[in-house]
Picture 1: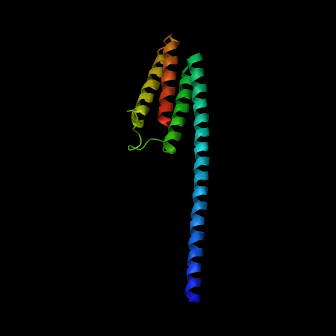
Picture 2 (picture 1 turned 180 degrees about the horizontal axis):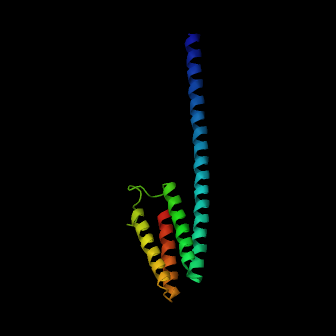
Picture 3 (picture 1 turned 45 degrees about the horizontal axis):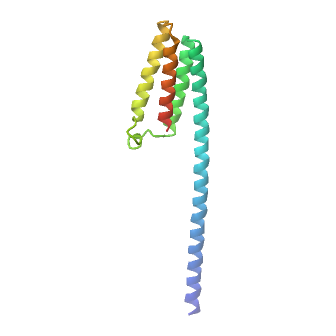
Length: 146
């Protein structure tokens, strides 16, 4: 009878170690998720800051070089968003409240970038249109990230 009790005690001890090990793994996993989320938010903020800076340069000085730099900043933002897989799967891309799908957002961003490029190439004097388009693109990028 002692032998059976000692085997039960060993099994109970193993089970309690396994349960506490699972709790440790869960705590570690949660800490890693929080850390990764913070890195993604930091990356988002840096990329958005670069887009804002390039957009400001473009609205102040409408040159082809500034258009190219602005497009490159947006391209990097979109590629990082895609790389991290934020809201780009078909199942997750529908934002609550009937928002646009990510693919649609990217198409609209491309269209707006072409409009800006055309304005600069055609030497249109009105910079207000460019400022408005830069603002629209910023909103679309935020919507894409969220």
